[in-house]
Length: 543
Image (cartoon, rainbow, N blue to C red; front, side):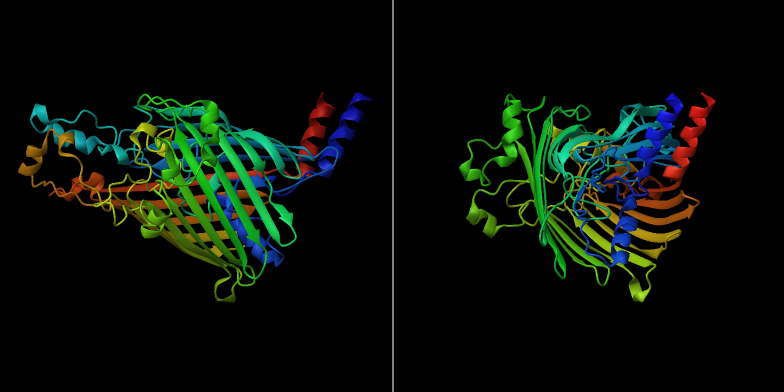
């Protein structure tokens, strides 16, 4: 009798078991596939991908909807740490392994997800050539460390740094965890899930999944609120004492977007973000209440009593043309306060950064051809020499807007730009997308302070000099995916070449060029209701 009741309850639950994801994740790894399905449907596009994650399925039945899946990934990297927008997976030299088990649930008033995971990386030393070189010099000219790039501080949180020390790096826990109490997608919740703000595929100014997600409170919409031809999203975020940021600051943000569903579909949005307090606040203090209210303060500096906390203000514009499968987007931000309205009008691009791009589905009237182009510009602006300002993320007192050793904004970091282009084939079963990436670091201000080097005289003896050049990263990528009987099989290859490595123009190019190869193999599967029902029935019958 008990088994019969259990089977009845399970079958009732599985009636609403979805084939689609309950939450659309922040990870851009899935973005092209998700958008392409919407364009192919030729229906009014009601999902706004500007703010992710968001609730994809709103279930109002008694038992709700479940989603269960797993992901297994194996990486091999033959040189310096590599790959961006990989969340908890830090791909140092050697082999890496990731295993995650994904759960999600939603009903009328509650939505949640979580993913227990395990990750390990061999974290091998990749700097042996530097050791051999400096050991050949006089004992007094050896650098202190060989296990990471030797950079000026503001460039020390790029993805090829080595923040996890020597030896194997392993981590286990629960990621992408989020729980929300809501009514029709409007509510309150707590989460450590990665976030992505903006329409970019490769980068975003304020928030990406480039590093581990941090715990935060969220109040607002987890699903777009529709009124006639308008869609509205609003979210408030607060994180108290970011534990994997050395400064331990508060993080507070507000986001808003409004979409007009016309021809074309137009989305406008903005985000205002603050880092405040922390251990390096130079004697200034801020209460939790004051930190939580910072995004609601006045806009211009002349109207404020103090300006000791770090602000970024970003605007978003996206235009979507569903009839032709085209999305065009612009993102622009400032990381400093304007004194007043006149100051903003005279120098609107002071401390400015921008991202522009487009994505196209159905090139040449072929429904399987997709492609896009994107350019992120975080260079010092033209006023930097006359009106000093810090670069984006260049805040030593806030650990350079980093978490767990990497920037949570654009992975290219301070004073950088990043060009990305891709074009390929995407059907329901097979995806083949090659891409090319050209990225520069230290575009304007790449001169490393003289005091950083105790061995400059030795540099000069071997042909070195003090005129540092921008570091240039060139990447060739190939993304292959195949769906087989419900399994998603992924293969990714990246060939990376660095010129002027660590901003050093050495006479011997072996010391200013770096090459690496990364191979990534993954298998994902999302269980459907027949598989779940069969497994549970077998378990109950055995017991």
